[in-house]
Length: 445
Image (cartoon, rainbow, N blue to C red; front, side, top):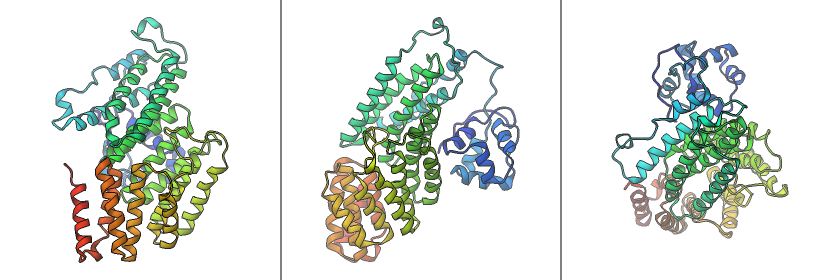
């Protein structure tokens, strides 16, 4: 996570970044106080910048917030105090004006890197705007050059849906980022003109959707820090929009970052928060079933076969839902991926018999290139565990071809994980060549 750096001195202003962080993880002041063994009023004083966490509590607080101690220090930096009761329009403009990145800010990287940097700045600005108070009464029209109409929200939502389709169909996922970035600019402009809480909540739902798509693009490119930032903002936007399903899905995507970063216990905490949030959502949606499917991966990472099976069984209950259980955007789980997800879990648990049945079933279904690559890596991992070089090299070579064609960081990441387990078979020249091919593909250009 990247905390926003704001000038200020201890005790001189609220710690907005700290408060957003604990809320994004599903904590109330009461829950966080209970987790740390302190009084609720202590948490409130920390958030208002009126007190410092004691030295012995800082490691516990950092662990609860899933940050390093250095990152916690950034979260504890108070923001400069605002003038007393400034008008809402002034507050909005003060945050937004002057945020466009300069050429110096963008650095000297390639176009993809510049777009990524600028987009993340824009997300931060929009996230700040989402948190600003807006009265229920309409702001006088003459204070704004542009006043959004309700149909703008419908248009933004339709564009989001289209961008998700582009992302799903794109061979190279990061090719969608410039379009997502351009769309985010228009939404940010609308935040400056939002007149009521209702309009702001609607816009928060739109950006919560878009932030998750941005996170998916960064996740596929192995930009885990950027992905985590997008998911955190998406969870916050979902909460501001009063949409538990939107927020729970963002927390679930955030958990994937920890899963693929080798931190299953951190993922478990996020998924617990996601499951609790999903309980307040629409029972006709598949949100809670998707959370269960991802929890199964965490149980597999922790070596808990029974917990994994129970979670997969809860996920299977998605098939009992009627109507439209997913929206094809921020909620895409419909149970069609459960065979490959079971296979992935059983590979991690070393249950080769169960894994092969599930993966063979998955491979026989229509799959996107990224999903097919993931299944192929899991089948190669089965060959590795069996010391079957033909199976290992055959499936891994197919996955390598797909990864090269799609430039999917997700598949490359799985191949890197496989490469880390090849040592016992490196005496075989085919395995040694495979290891070199994975290394070359994973090497940054």
